[in-house]
Length: 208
Ligand SMILES: Nc1nc2c(ncn2[C@@H]2O[C@H](COP(=O)(O)OP(=O)(O)OP(=O)(O)O)[C@@H](O)[C@H]2O)c(=O)[nH]1
Ligand SMILES: [Mg+2]
Picture 1 (tube, rainbow, N blue to C red):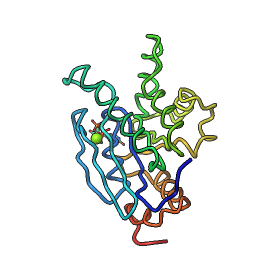
Picture 2 (cartoon, rainbow, N blue to C red; picture 1 turned 60 degrees about the vertical axis):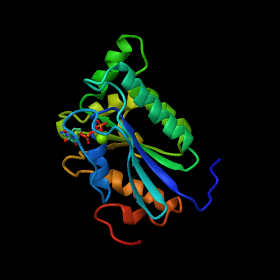
Picture 3 (tube, helix red, strand yellow; picture 1 turned 180 degrees about the vertical axis):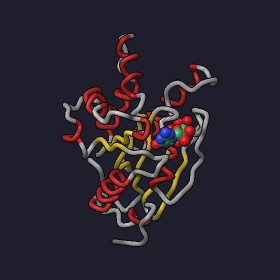
Picture 4 (cartoon, rainbow, N blue to C red; picture 1 turned 180 degrees about the horizontal axis):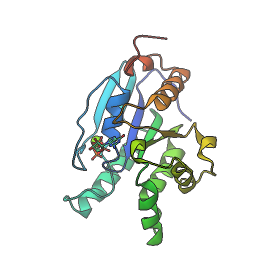
């Protein structure tokens, strides 16, 4: 049970390396964080705070070229530990996935007998945070939108994906096509009593 004291509240952005977390963070919010051409650009959290709402862009877990397996494990442990230790103030998590490669990567893991790391992360976030928004990013690279059904299925949601529009948000952070996610995240935060929330988002000024 969350104690709704007047302290800081937090929204975390999590996901594999290179899925576009930092790009999405900057296209939703009135801030510019470092984005990279190379995976592993964000090695420590970027934060953006407006009043009592804190947004955190976490480092990407999963395979990061050139840094070795131990380092990757450390990032994943860091992310899990960060979320666990801040759970009392986290009101939502945005799990960013690369919609154009998610299914293929998940199936590769499954064929080796593993639970895909992004599925595991979704289940973890779903359990520990009050609300998870899955940002299915890089939709500009997806030719057949039915791929979203397969993404939903991998995450344990019965297709069609349209039945899960309050969970799965197809976006293109690079093109700034994020209005669906922006609207629902903003409304969710307002309805959670976070009056500073609207001021944090791009294209919105002041209270509403
Ligand atoms: N095509 C396409 N590319 C995108 C989109 N969003 C981000 N990218 C690209 O994906 C690459 C990684 O973006 P980042 O925002 O740095 O990804 P990240 O998830 O923060 O990466 P880490 O910090 O390494 O975890 C960059 O080259 C972005 O330009 C998108 O919507 N479409
Ligand atoms: Mg990043």
